[in-house]
Image 1: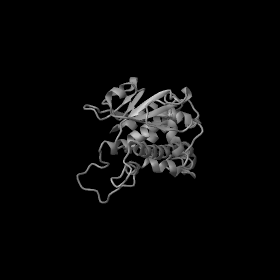
Image 2: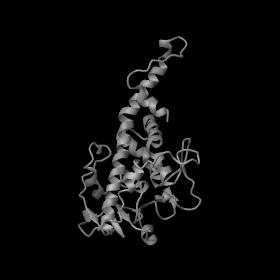
Image 3: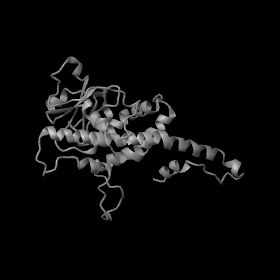
Image 4: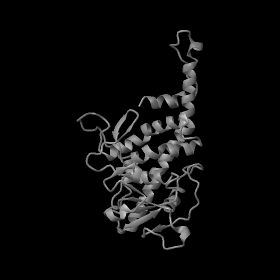
Amino acid sequence: MWAITRGGFYRKLLNFPKTISRPLMGTSNLIRVSSLAYSTGSPNDVPSKRVGTHSGSFHCDEALGCFMICLTNKFSNSEIVRTRDPKVLEGFDAVLDVGGVYDPSRDRYDHHQKGFEEVFGHGFNTKLSSAGLVYKHFGKEIIAKELQLGEDHPDVQRLFLAIYKNFMEAIDAIDNGINQFDTDKPPRYVNNTNLSSRVGRLNLDWLDHNQSPEKENEDFQQAMALAGSEFLDSVRFHAKSWLPARSIVMECIADRYDTDPSGEIMVFKSGSFTYLSSRKR
């Protein structure tokens, strides 16, 4: 059983430019990586919560899920513990991508069990991964912090749906083996540049001399940092660029009768196409 603390991946995060948001990242916790579920240091070092995920090879969904859940108020000072021991997992405050249980009332977010068919809803029908489950239940809270608005604000709901469409859904689909297109034809080219592929390449290589669990945990930290930084970039883009562009488009639609009495001609102002291009996908 091996543990990675919240502090552990924040050191890695600081290496990414423009990835730390004041509303999202308001912590100054000391950074440590331990091979124990509990700290042997002072009581101040003991995390308030423990979040479990599986050991061994990792994927983008649990790396991102672990990152996101630690952005929430409930799990803001959590330790990430990597193990497949069912008895150990039972004692954790949250479990992601392992355990065979989906029960948000107990913060259990696995998607591998037989009969699991949970989707995001709101017109989306892709089966969720552990990242999608965390986002479904905590995404509004995370976005509301970034916007510094209440979770019930309309802009929070707009970003909640837009970020799922433009970022999260692909991670869910790839992890669940869902093709992007309804066709039996082979793809014309291989795409190994997506986020899920890049996270996958952070796993231990068979040529690596160091195959220790400690090294595996270091690699998982990097995976959380990579997935988390791109998630925050997506949140930030939608908050700072996409949302204002949407407002411009809505104004253009409202003013279309001023352009032409028929209402069939619209003049789109600068910035409009940031929003319009996302609607084409």
